[in-house]
Image 1 (tube, helix red, strand yellow):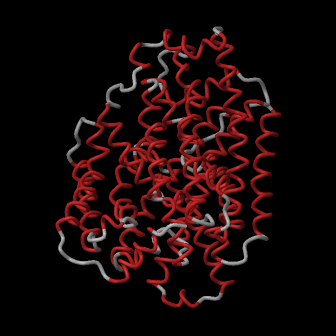
Image 2 (cartoon, rainbow, N blue to C red; image 1 turned 90 degrees about the vertical axis):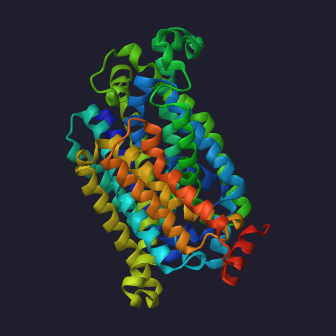
Image 3 (cartoon, helix red, strand yellow; image 1 turned 45 degrees about the vertical axis):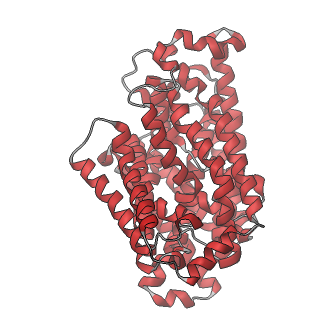
Length: 490
């Protein structure tokens, strides 16, 4: 990287912190800090939901898969996410917004106390918080790897740089800082992605026809929708996991719907995010698909995107690309920190320390900032030790994807009247069944990736749905009223 690249990167960080300072003066209480006061417009919520759905890991872990396996990464990731969010737009997203309007929730797990009971709420809150430590740490490690490729700086330096920048602006500005930075980051990402797309087309020399002729210059299997071990079965498993993740099982994404002004606004936001997932990754992944043409037999395919940037982009544009990668990662890690601190502040700490319930508005806001700071610090430490958990791909796919389903299923299906008989006991059985399955697969590994990743979620789903349908126990009046309110039209 040259001086101009570092200047562009520094300006980007200055923009982040400036927005954080601006947002600081919009935050007067914990509701402003965690849910932007319920005032997010559909377009800002939709863009934020989309940008918060992936990070710099796309340019490391997923770039490596695009290098070795080709188009299948779009099919089993972006396309299944697009379908998942589109389904969520009609059945799940509006219910999250109604929860805040009707119940005044500020965290995604807050409603579980009424829907199930205290033990179930606490189990989901604790396990979910632990999982997000690994997931967010993996994403910080991913962007540090890219910074290492571009500048030669150490992984440790990269983790600390990214981690502390996000720590500063999200701690002072809350969700307002997060979503407005998401918008700025989306603009940067589009500029950088289109630049890289055009540069690779130019290098291939076939003009616009290079979009199609590219595949003739790659191994035949790279153009297939499914490429072992990423089979049709694996894609279907990821569709199930992504539905529960992107409809709100990944808590920071639920917050984007919770913080809208109405169920209709949340629905429009989800539709926008879905359309972006169908379209934008095709442009974003194109250089990654082309990487084997320029760099054959890379020892570490996860470095392919970074090498493309250094090889083909002039000074200044390298800084722009790196800023967009930081943007991707910071949008997700910052929103994770904000939402997890809501869960800790609203659902965990009041149980451990009952006096938290009667804190003043000023002290509640201070507690929100302290928990945000502490969680972000913990993810930085996890990122610094990511090698102990199987690296970036291990953290994000093997750990997060496999563990997400068991806690997300009771959260998402608990919003729907069809599962009203699935009570707290059934929810706990479902969660424990999925977690035990995950542990068994770690102790006794299987060769099929679809099974190793999807089995915990499928086991939890079957336990939750079948047990609920077989149950003859009627839900309480409070649960019936809650589900009825969530099904009402706006």
